[in-house]
Image (cartoon, rainbow, N blue to C red; front, side, top):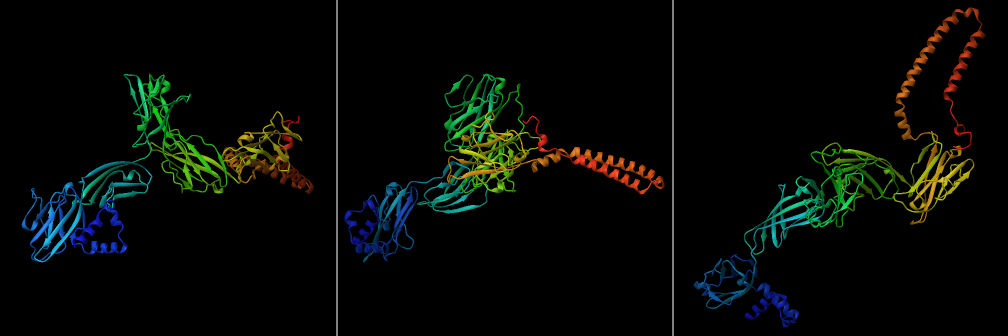
Amino acid sequence: MHFLLSIALEMARPASMVSKNYLTLSLGFAVFTSVIASDLRRILPLDLKIREGEDLQLRLTSALPNTVSCYVKTPLLTSFNLESGESDSSNRINYWTENGECGVRAQSVTKDDTGRWRLTAKNASHTLVDATFVEVLDKVSESEKSYDIESGLEYTLMLKENTKYCSVDQPHSEVTLLVGGDCKVELQQPTAAIRGNWKATTGVVGQLQEIPAKVELNVYQDQLAVGYVIHHDSNTINAYCNLRDSEKELEFCRFVRPDSTQTGYQLSEGLHSGRYGYYGAGLKNGECGITIETPTQEDYGQWQCSVGVKDEVPFGTYVQISSGTNRAAVIRGEALPTEATATYVHGKLQLRCEANVPISYCWFLGPDGEIFTPTQSLQQEDLPYKYIGNGFGKGQCGMEIKTAEVKHEGQWTCHMGPSTPGFELISTIDVAVSETPLAAKNRHISTINQRTLTLECRTVPEKISISYCRFLMPDGTGIHISDEISENNPLLLGNAHYSFYGDGLRLGGCGLKVDRILPKHLGTWTCAARLEVSINNSEVFDTIVVSTTESSSQNAAGEENLTASATAGIVSGVLILAGLLAAGSVYTVKWIKARQLQDNTSRLEVISASTDESRRSSSSTNSGISLADMAPRNGRA
């Protein structure tokens, strides 16, 4: 029996302590000893992990009738007959049983209690003996931690390790989470809404009492704390834009003057030049600032601050500096002018708008009514668009749509919410989407009040060098044009001169200028080019319609501008018509009186004369000027 128990105990030892001889036992014998270890054990628990300060309890699984002794042997190799009341010197180890079994209770265990504990029960005819290994672990106490995590990024919040379970109370929520195993919570897309104290009650291995754990969680964005301090005693100004609630380091710090020079300063610890130097606790602490000594009037106004964080797009904000005596003008939020943009089907589309003040958010409304809301703090690969720009703090709103479609062509509106609550700032962006990476700047051109014709195409959405540029006129005439063909050295065809216009071929420009508009120029033109770098080496193209009428957008504007004149014309027409009716009435009365004196022929002559006058009036009103009449008689425009 002792031999079998020794084998079973040997199996429970760590692998590093097992002898090589034991590892060479046959498979059958190993199975046999496994059965002994699991089925013939006579002690509870079979092994024990317990924390310092806890009370240990061990007992045999069955009681011997008429037990005469119950011995315990400790890891220190001391033995006590618990049945007779023997104990250690501190009376810490005592007899304990549930149903008459041989058992032991050791109070307030220490690291010295780590090791094998053996219990032996005897009566007149039988002996029961078994042992268990006890591991005394470090005492666990209440823990308090704090974490800073970035908004929008997945994170595992670990409240406490090596636990069996925990009950978690979340901040700003009535829901309690029960978690098994390590006390942790998976945060998918955390925001400031979960910022605060997370509290947990944990059950740890080897301890009866539950242990509280608390985590102070801070969820931050890469926002900047902005401000300035004027020191009148030293006549200096300290302005700053520091990372708020972040443990990140700054790669660079830059301030740009508010005056027309737009001079920039690259700032870091130890740098100083003239009246300007670095201010703050260091870039490693996320602080970006500038000290201005003996400030002048030009130093007051709206400075630009930009910062860089490793592996992130640089961003920034404005710092408005004013003084009590020379107070800078308050900046009124406005949307800055935008530029039209172009791309091609399946290419990327970039839209940009900007305000002269920091903004908190922005969104775009497409021509088809679709809404896009880019955000600088969250860049998801699965979204069809992403934010571009230098940050809301600098009033910049930008968006890149990964794959442009025909439905994206038209007028977009950009809505920007200023950081100070108020009305949104709105700007419009005209977007053209061509079939190929070559797009016409204007697809519809009116020749009204124009003496020359300018056609311009360019590579989109980026500048790409082209090998050649050509145009096809409405009458089928082809023109090969390049930078070399200038207005001083044009191509001559008939009475018109043709020259290159716009950016050169190296910058992806393909343009044509005609110094005289002729009838053959009216109709559909085609611009075409070949990109120097292309996947399939195919030609790219777009079309331009030239006409003597205004485009629909021009007509709409014209109708609005002509409203007043049209009204005046209608009023004048009514007055003239009333006058004619009055004159006609007088004439009719005279004609009736003279009816007996005149014959039918005279009456017909009067009608004929009236009809001819009406025709002459109509002809004069509807007459127009031909294109040939518009050209100067000397033959040049």
